[in-house]
Length: 402
Image 1 (spheres, rainbow, N blue to C red):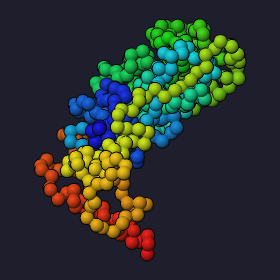
Image 2 (cartoon, rainbow, N blue to C red; image 1 turned 180 degrees about the vertical axis):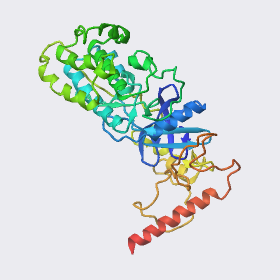
Image 3 (tube, rainbow, N blue to C red; image 1 turned 90 degrees about the vertical axis):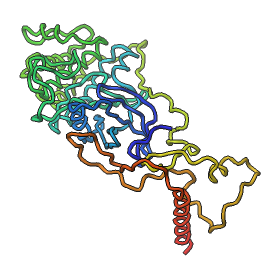
Image 4 (cartoon, helix red, strand yellow; image 1 turned 45 degrees about the vertical axis):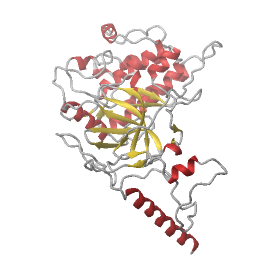
């Protein structure tokens, strides 16, 4: 079974990796569902501060994938997000090549809607690219994207964590003014949206430097494979002078709203239908869609994590006994109604509550689920736990029958 983090998050299997950490499919024992957890792998001060900034974002929008909770345990920290299984726009391009213009208009409108919500929080994303735009597995239906990875995002006015002569981001997606050391601004994000749109239409990563050189006498002609009505929007997004671009994501959406009606209908009989399918790997042994399988459910150990039930326990004997064979009867006690009884082997969270607190700015993160010094577990722990469960069940049965 996977490692239990802070007594709540069970790391199931790794599904991605970034510059600062690994992303795991994770079972949330409190909310009883799978989530994505980004686990910080580095420990230098700059990386930790960016991690703190990223986990602090709480942007609730259908086209934004932002952190929802965080936890710290010993010397590790993580935050969780919704689990999105349809891959990224980079995967979609690898599967299908250039996408139909009307399909691209739908994707760009959703991307701009999410970016508008991000900018409304005064946050500049700074790393918009196909690999950071994820897709829900909607099959052949209408696509649904989520803007993700806020690892280098920052609020306007916040202090920069790098020297001014260094630029953070992905090469090839920088706005020209970023390379000159300008402060991060919304128009730089909009420039990156233009590059993403051009990539989706042509299937080839745009050469930002070559594009800049073409803007000598205004917006250049549309590149091959880009419809003129759509280029009128993308061309202004890609203007090297930020003052000549759209000023907001809302403005771009308004300009984009009428473009699909100006495009020729897509009637090519041999055109492949776009399908966004679930790309997550199969769950490892011991897990299914409802979480850890009942036979593998764990109990909390004295360190705040989970462990398997002790071998040859009464519960294990009952589960393993073939039909028609009896097992030694336990000491008599009042019957426990199934509707009120705790299921055998069900996970029990540590008694100390999960706490969300501010990260320290220096020193190792503290454990939020409570720290206990390692040592031999008391011999009465399991009998006391069983007795407590029996008492609770008897009380519930008495209330139900009174």
